[in-house]
Amino acid sequence: MSASATPRPRRFLPTGALNGTIRVPGDKSISHRSIMLGALALGETRVTGLLEGEDVMSTAAAMRAMGAKIVKTDDGEWIINGVGVGGLLQPETALDMGNSGTSTRLLMGLVASHGITATFVGDASLSKRPMGRVIDPLSTMGADFTSVEGRLPLTMRGASPAVPITYRLPMASAQVKSAVLLAGLNTPGITTVIEPVPTRDHSERMLRGFGANLTVDVDEEGTRTIQIHGPAELKGQTIVVPGDPSSAAFFIVAALTVPGSDVLIENVGLNPTRAGIVTVLRQMGGSIEEVNPREVGGEPVADLRVRHSQLHGIEVDPEIVPSMVDEFPVLFVAAAQAKGRTVTTGLEELRVKESDRITVMRVALELAGANVTETEDGLIIDGTGGAPLPGTSGAHHVATHLDHRIAMSMAIAGLNSMNGVAIDDTSPIATSFPNFEALLASLVAR
Ligand code: S3P
Image 1 (cartoon, rainbow, N blue to C red):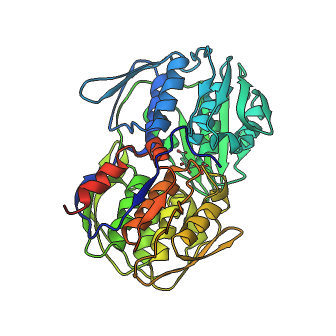
Image 2: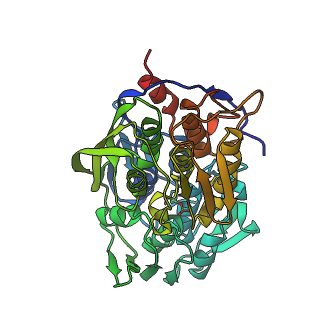
Image 3: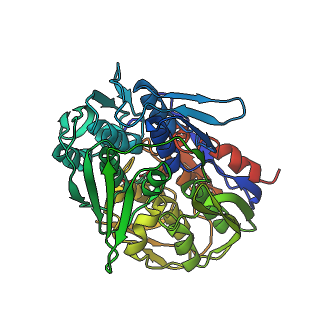
């Protein structure tokens, strides 16, 4: 597959020990939601710590195109003046979602219950991803879609009024859950989502914080029933976005795998629906200490002190997958350097992310000299026991397929390798973690 317009290849070389203190950018999921809900609220919303990656900027551009006022102040705060639930305007041109599945699926939910028509377009990666998973419930609510096989480019006509539904999620997806709940905001009556397997709950937390009437009931099997009463009235809020655990994960694995490392990562969001990677790396023997646990913006946060550790392979419990669904590419890198075998299962959803992360990581790790077997729903990795991976040789480059997390994971694989790891294109990193390379450089001894 082709890379982005101007690919930026780079070889990530062995660095020696990583030492120092860093702070990762704001959480991507929370940043998207703060812009969307701020844009729908009445009055002013102020956001600090917003992730200024390309994906979140796609959300901001779309909400501006539908009537919200969104500006950044000189001191880095974002100020949003919303249109009020029901007040979205018809966008004059197609909404460009870039690489962002979260922007696309959540905004489709918002448009579904407004009487407007919107066209969604995206890059080559996003245009391959399945949208049927949101088209299905939103069609039942009354929205109308035109697309080829449920892919972008896609045009939708929202329903006004939309019809409330009860929807049982057929897959563990916070994006699908959120799309239906956001559609429920401007739908008269009670919209219900039944979630058999819990996924990230930022939408529920933030909808409540903005004043929506939203309830969550959990039965004895752990199934969650989430109900939102519409039409809702949202009021502008002040939001502090915690650091993104998915971004921190790259530096956690880097510090654990590069001998001699000792890194403090400040302000990491540790919402239990997101923190599975910390649990699994500890099960593998990783030294990750939580310092100064506190609450930021209604989310649990701590600083993480991470020290080099001899990791060992484990069988990862598939039940933990939803709480670390984006962290498997970098977990595979940790496993490739652990002692013994790591087995992962239940990862079907990884095949429909920005790339097919099972196959793409199997190919990438093999190119770097790791011992990997691909199964239908995961990877089996036999680690080196701590020895550096050979790395990529000659003109071979890892193909990142427009997937930021493949690029960053394989960058980390390069740090403790013999030859370094060459990557075809680092430009997708800017979708979620624009200062990744600068932070990495700041931890390397001069
Ligand atoms: C996200 C949900 C997850 C995750 C994505 C962000 C969200 O996607 O992979 O990076 O913000 O709701 P799925 O809902 O497809 O699992």
